[in-house]
Image (cartoon, rainbow, N blue to C red; front, side, top):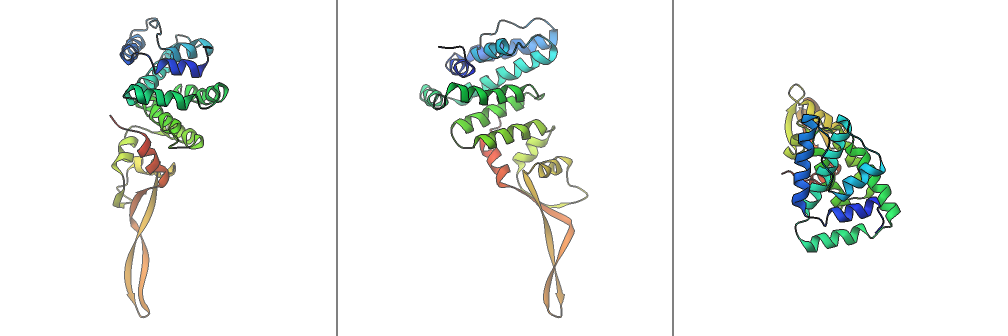
Length: 225
């Protein structure tokens, strides 16, 4: 089997996942102690490190840790051998060159993530893409959305719709999620009697914040621990 990124990913999801968990812990420790990285036993990670010549700077070690977290999450989400085989078959449904090109985005975007939850959520999105629950364009868009999340944003997302929120109390987190298309703000109307009937007058003081279809689909793909 050629040492491609796709094949290394296939090998990684058929290995014993307990080795991957230990690997993440070792790398996390090396990040703190500034020691050399342990021998990488995860085929996907070792192939990426070799192909892209990732070294031992603090930034590169963090990138390697994120790649390990990505693989760890995939193995935790694929719970039995039947699912594993099905997932591998779906991975192999495209040519190696196509999959390798897709996986290059995974490699690139994981290098940008600081919070360790993000590469795990990216793995959820990748599984959703392979299972054809989202398109490639949606996967690419959501990967960028994850990169823009600040602390508290994921909790705001999972809290769902918020009603009767005043302009004075709306959170910065909610406003950020509106800006990236996950929520939409809806002004609340008030009724006013007039000689020609009841007029609806837009009220600016309170709004409902409602998940968009884009936001709802993201929630359906990523799964909190």
